[in-house]
Length: 522
Image 1 (cartoon, rainbow, N blue to C red):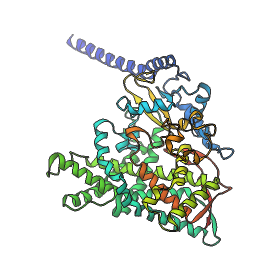
Image 2 (cartoon, rainbow, N blue to C red):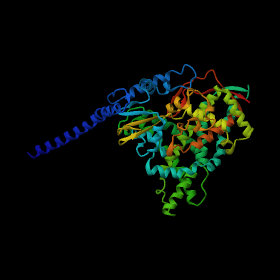
Image 3 (cartoon, rainbow, N blue to C red):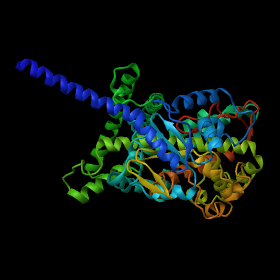
Image 4 (spheres, rainbow, N blue to C red):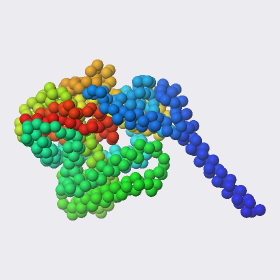
């Protein structure tokens, strides 16, 4: 009798556990999404009806794959329908207030500058997404942090990006640019001109600058780490294309195993470099002027302020946190500048009047000499061109946040669990702000600065906005000005007839089929 009773209790417990699990699953994949859909429609948002489990993800993947098969019919800076075909379709059909389904999670589109600014000031309410842990492997460090941890890391990293520190890194920028220019001069040496796909070289330039600026004398080790990070990024992007299922990344698949191997190799290499630098600092020697040295110096000073001289490295940033910031140096630093430069060269090859104006300013400022920081900071025409490229071709064309508790945004009641898509692309091309020529390349709109160009709306944020604005903005702009100046000092650029205009997004906006440019030696 006791055995029967015990078995009955166990069966009842199992049934309750299974039933509870089923209720949670049904709520996750159906009940909750349908409830959120009703709430969003009541707020004036429109979108496709929710499809079980996948939402709009199948359409998003299919439409993007199809779009990537077909380049644009002609050169146009209006490429949104190619890089975001589903969002373009929803925008056309429903207007600016649309939503789409990222699996069972709704994502609403916000493209009013005043609402974006409001959200960026409410950092405790509009938080980083926590949909897929792989994303935090892909974009680690400061970008993924929030709250007190973010404040601490930001405080310790600020010194590395001050103007006086950038001045120390300028020789590294110049050395990397010289290597690329020497290669290009060999291409044009025989005939005085030659065609080249500049995109791979600009990617290499970005990686080379970061390797030199971040690791200095550990430059070669830095380059090896970069190769591994590229592979890890590619693996991460493949994983992010699937619907997130908790725990699936721990399954012993070939992809997961390789991801872990690469992660371990990166960790080991960075750990060795950091430990060598730590020993130098603990011995009382002055840290090196590269990004890693400045970060470790700042970290060590933080530790000394808290615990004195007992060298407890766990008080400041942990070794793993320093490793994450080094990975972020690479991923953000390389891609941001490389994409800015490639679109700048493409557009200047197309708009040769602006190329001539930029070259004239560069020669007036530097002659044939290597550019120096004060001169770079006073390049007005070059800055206008770079701003206009960032407006039309921002490295990231949207920013995503998530609501974990109900909040209000400009009178809109946003339910918890909702994803928010802040569309940089749409704001940067809003005709009410930029005028009827918003889709056109016209750098002179920035002739009197950003505020005048945006009519005081602060609606230009290629590097983000508010307290979380990209820490490396000055670094990226200085590197871009240096590279562009040195290139235009030596070459006239002409867009090749073989160039196929096909903007695409992987992590950042890039030319899918390369950037074929004819270089003419000056």
